[in-house]
Length: 299
Image (cartoon, rainbow, N blue to C red; front, side):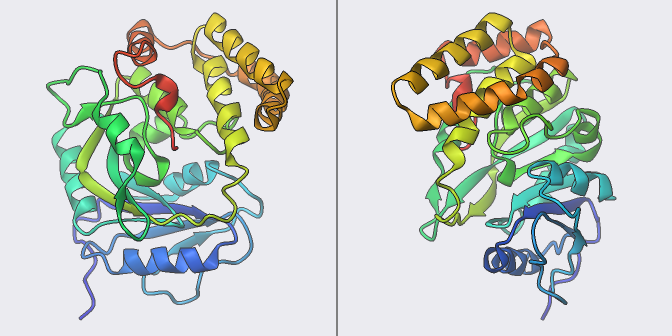
């Protein structure tokens, strides 16, 4: 017997895809099987990948170009529920997770983003990010659940739509790859809570193909994140380290450096220093007291 749609209508699942129809079908199958039966919005950044007449009944948005992570912003703008759960075309939420996330967001009005626990691969192994987030040295806050963090996995988080849109969503300078930290900074700067809550579980079944070129993107965006929000000496030192690695023949560093220099004018034009309280939290993560700030990104 087919599950009925969740009567509360509190959470929309938003996912981005690009030319991976098999992975997308698997994810839609998993979402259709959830007891919550959430509404689903798919932003198709590539060719027509969405299977017609799928039981998940996704609303499909085709921007006509590759919008990268910004496709999540587009999906959130089209959602009509108070909360939006993100996943990618190779990840999905476990039964009960979305209802629990909505309950937590209902109960904690200052909560802007919930980062869930991610289980990876057919064997459902713990993603290394789970341990990193659980070990965050940021102090707990009485009006928030979970562990305060300044990082998360975009494919396993639930946001308060109002907070996400007011913060500007994922940043256009970064486009894709390690885009989470700036959003966490911006939510915290606006007073919203960002927490890791391991009682929310997502599955991630990444495909090996297409992931080989991610390292330069991640390194590029780590440095651009500093230029966008952190003190200038910190950002300048990061560029110097990248340049030094490139000189030694590190091809990934060279490509990352080229990307940083190409996007640096745009980053400087959109630069906005963090409030002191958020900068102090970011520095606490920098010091080694807990996970380094740059570890707060997908591995």
